[in-house]
Length: 345
Image (cartoon, rainbow, N blue to C red; front, side, top):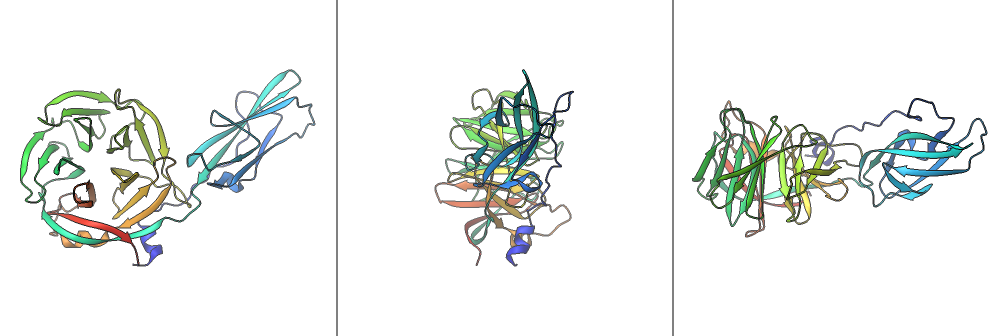
């Protein structure tokens, strides 16, 4: 497959905002102008801001903001997150302050690197499992599965496929992603706005939590300090590990536009690996700014599993630090694949 075709697997079209220049009830006498054509600009470019004053009103001072952060009229963007933002200028004139706003879309400045893989091993996997989340802990695989009246949390011997322990979710819950941090296993549900916390040693449910900003639960991972959560959009939320409150988010973008339907997550060597729902590609994401730095084409794997009526898409990744390899499966796949990732030739 050619590089452009591989990128098409997960790259979505660019959606720039329309221009805007005023907020509040009163229309501003001023216009905020940028050097960003179509309000889009690449990371590491310098943003230049100017105020247009068509009425030639006296201006005492101007202050500029990117979201709520104070910036100057000339600002390098290399420390800012990608995605949609709001520019604001506060113009002080004739004893009053007028505000004028403008949308800004910050894009990555590099094409994602395209990766393929080497297949090392194939292991048995429960063909009935609608896999939503995978994670290793002490060389044992933990799996969360979905579908109403079928959702489960499992502890699995990955080499044999044997289910070592199984917890069925209540029928009203659709299981989603999971992650393990500080002896706790965290599991999401889809549309109920609820997640569950389990003791990793016993899989006893110890508490639950609510999503305070996002509407849905899709995927989870952690970096050892904080938890990252996807909600089926281009956003990945950053959760406080103690309160599980969604504190802030990054937006997943390439140099062309946003990546939506971000699903199951895995933290690998300082990057977030993300399944893109209903695609056979995985995005490698910079957790600091949301930039898609690479894409992995896993298209050949689906052809290696038993083809049946209930077969569904690629979903489920787990990095095993003991073997330093990645394990990949899908929804109702009868195989779990062990791979290493390499640049596409």
